[in-house]
Structure formats: C-alpha cells, structure tokens
Image (cartoon, rainbow, N blue to C red; front, side, top):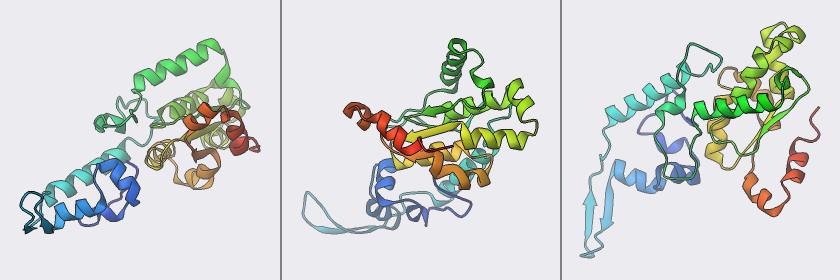
Length: 232
C-alpha cells in the first residue's frame, strides 16, 4: 500500500523500505527476513551447536503473484470519485497487530455527514479549510474532498473539474500522520488519482508529525500554525 511497484518481488522486497519501517510492518528485521528467505548458519539456542538453515520459507511464485495482484487492485480502486465502486483498498488489508486501525468507510461517511449537519453549507465555501490531524488511511480527507468536489456551489465557482479539484487540494485540505508508514499509506491514497498534484502539494499540505504527542503537551495548535499557518 505504501511501497511497491510492478518490479517488486520476493528477491528485492527488503530493498523497498527503510529498515525501521520494514520491522514495523512485518514484525521482523530485514536480516531476519533474509535469513528466512535465503538461509544461513545459526547457533542452536538449546544445544549451542552451529547449524545451517536452507531458507526458502516463502513460496516465491505465490509471493510475487500476491504482490502484483494487490498492486493491480490498488490501481483499480485509486479513483475514489467513482460512485460505482462499493469497496476501497483497505477492504483488502487485514487488521494489524498495532493501534493503527483503519476507520471503516461507513463510519467515515457518518462522521462527514454529521459535520455537514452541524455546519450547513460547509462544503459550498471555497475558503473553508479541513484537516485530519491524526490520519490513518486518508479516508476522512478523501470523503471531504468528494463533498467539496460535488458541491453545486463549488461547481458554479469552478466549472472545470480539474480546476475545482486543484483548488480543493491546493487550498482546502491538510493532514498529519504519526508514522512514516501511515504517512505513505494515507497520502498515496489521497493523491492516488493525480500524481502531478501529489508531487506539487504533498509536503506542503501533509506532514509526518505525531499530533498525539503535541496534544498531550498542549502545543498542538502551535504546531498546526507553524506547519500550515502560512499557507495562502
């Protein structure tokens, strides 16, 4: 979801991520992964004897096919403006053994519905700004982007689809993510439909910052102002 392209295989899987991210995602170090894949000598903890492990723990064909199938599905679901799609890529990611749990799309929609109910016309204003200060998947931001994009008032102000989405992404949505892997997952999803916008706006509007830490310290407002306050 965060890393990978059509060239990703079992043999280069460990080259695609930073060492600390690899362990966060897989639960093992890159050296441990290489040992399981390639084999090597080791010392038996019980007998203290030196032994050899042949490796080949993973089925290379299955591994490579699974990676490519996931990447193909990711591309198929990258356009979150498609109303005919009833799923998103997060439906294909199993629950993780961490606190980084993706909020279901149905819950996100209810959250944004409530935001609109309590603030009528909020998605009709081209000057309103929105932020997710603890992104997990990017679903909350993308749901807001869709509401702004489909607003009849916004369509009047920006009749051309490209100009409307460009304005929204350049001036109205921001986010913080707590870790490197979550940052990449969420921003890849948010900008999945337009790589040019991603390249021009990614580091301006979306930052890898653990907001929880600053919220506990009581300095989150200052951090948000520092990171986004100068945006025009």
